Length: 133
Image (cartoon, rainbow, N blue to C red; front, top):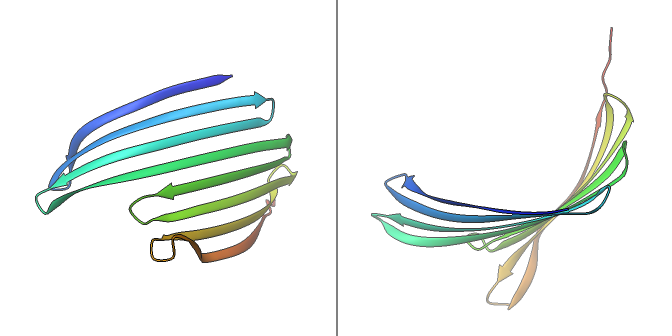
């Protein structure tokens, strides 16, 4: 399954205007495997000045079973010049009891070095437990 749609907006933005264009491409390669690509362009005009931003987002979702999934989100925005990656594993042990493992890594697009340099990276885990009475 392939789905492509877009959105165009123009309107007020603080003391000025914003023109935005966004595309959404969704692919279902097979059951349990989804890919999403969402670029967005913004043209901001304020009395203080004008600037443009670009955001690229790519998401890949894999469902190994109804109880296990892995989601990878990669994003780059031109305003902060940061490339970010988040990988999130979810395991539903029993309904209402979930285990999450999350890895996040961010890089700065450094024009002085002509490459991406690591800003931060972290690993987190979370356990949700539901007690019914």
